[in-house]
Length: 209
Image (cartoon, rainbow, N blue to C red; front, top):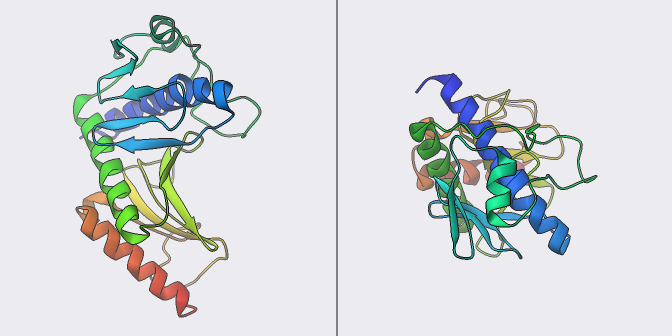
């Protein structure tokens, strides 16, 4: 899959999560946490908005998003396309007038990675609820002073990857990125492989490594 297709699609999906789901939810409830679903992602609170890999649905409305602007999609759904305001400095950078651009293979790769990461996190820490955060567009949990999660790629790692991010810097072969440890989903395989990666990170942290 071309890196440009993955990057462009990731930006558009980030915009969907931030402008069309998290923004309306935050204005209604004060909450920004989203959740991974089997075929995409959704709000955790009202209003009930869902992305299923091709379309955003709300109530009885379902709008296929590719080729449309965020503002036009929002108008069809009866919401306003806008990110949560004054909560964080980063984000997708997507503006409401931009057009959603999706490559079907890239969508499948990102949604599949989110689903595998969410499953691994639930198996790794059954008492924790994984959250898809709209700021960085990653699904994760925090246990003690360690973040565990799955990101769809970014400037540091250009494809979907799992991460272990201790709040205190670590050194050693396992810790291969400035924020801790990262391994691509392509390298780890399925949820079981991601879970094994998290387990190694937890053991090393517990041992002080």
